[in-house]
Image 1 (cartoon, helix red, strand yellow):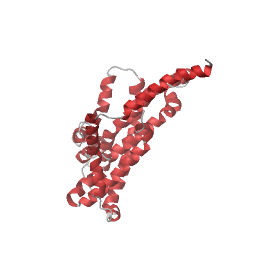
Image 2 (cartoon, one colour):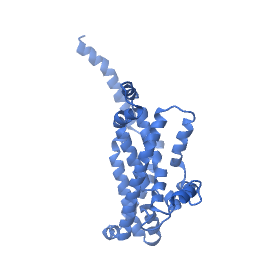
Image 3 (cartoon, rainbow, N blue to C red):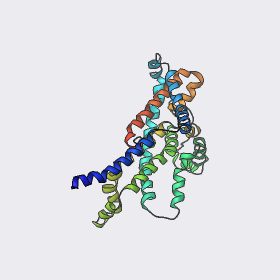
Image 4 (cartoon, rainbow, N blue to C red):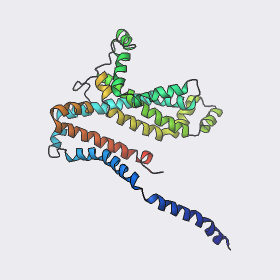
Amino acid sequence: MDKAGAADTLTAGPRRGRARLRGKRGGAPLPLLVPALIGLAFLVLPLVALLIRAPWRSMPDLLTSAEVWQALQLSLLCATAATAVSLVIGVPLAWLLARVEFPGRGLVRALVTLPLVLPPVVGGVALLMALGRNGVVGRWLDDWFGVTLPFTTAGVVVAEAFVAMPFLVISVEGTLRAADPRYEEAATTLGASRFTAFRRVTLPLIAPGIAAGAVLAWARALGEFGATITFAGNFPGRTQTMPLAVYLALQNDPEAAIALSLVLLAVSIAVLAGLRDRWMTAS
């Protein structure tokens, strides 16, 4: 048998195995298919209903009203500012968790990810206890610097950063753990400081992870409701973001609430489309 024939014989077995595996994976047993379809309908049907009940004819007038544009501009401004804050302090925190061994690192990681599972209203109450006028830190900010965060636009940024930064930290930490640390070690052996190695070597390597985490944090900040209304209130033009405007409009003008919800839905779809290579591709 020549080499070509031997190669075909060796590869024929794996090809047949993969073909049989694909055949077995092609079907789905009925006890799994039915609940899977019910779960899909449970997740998709509300979004479809939102599109069906949308007041498409009056949508331009609803979306161009002064109240909507005011809430939208404030939402974009605060979400972007919260993302910037998360980048400044979240990336170093992710590097610390990924690269430095220290006692209690697991506890620190758990505390960092706690806002992901913490009810947002509880987060808002915690922020009030820490940064309110009579809070643990807020009283000193007020007495020494005259800074008051609750029920201000800056308070919206703080509340959104509190709930959004864990998304950035988790994304960047995962990217750092996947990156080869030998590049940093090589840079330090050539005379670069740890900070220079991080700035010139590590940051370019983890830039895609930082970008993905920033987008997720921005989207989470844009949709934040509970912590914002608890810590910053719901004052039009000052603290009323899009989710708060949806909540208020739902009580007085359901069509406006649907229109605002569609805007946030479109933003969410755009975020998923931007992250499709990271989150939506099959392995």
